[in-house]
Length: 192
Image (cartoon, rainbow, N blue to C red; front, side, top):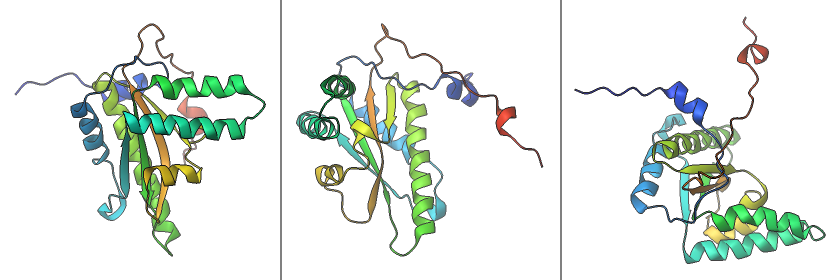
């Protein structure tokens, strides 16, 4: 049996939001690998509360139109902001919207489902690096996470909440993602 030197801690340290990607389609087998990684996330009572909406090709063009309308409504006096915000979307070949199940009358379980879905997204993010892909998780703005239009666009049934919109593509090496400074854990930890 061959062992490879792989460190989860190193992978976490390398993880970055990659906003600059090449206009190259992401292969279906790599999308499937990301989705498979997501399903390995911890989730309460194995409810597997997530659903993934893969947007590419013609559907992505429709999403771009929807996002433009949203941004123009939100920032009517800031056309430059609208254009800058749209650059990430128009340059990114793959978008995945991730929803979490809401459980009627059970706010605690619904919240657990949201947390599990966040873990699924993070699992995808770590897998993306291994697959040579760049990844950005949007929870507002151009991701339309809090806009009812997104639910209509993806045809999401009642009882689901959008947790994030993922923008995925091959990193543009000309604009490498930079490491952000992080606060040392000691400043955010209380030992009891």
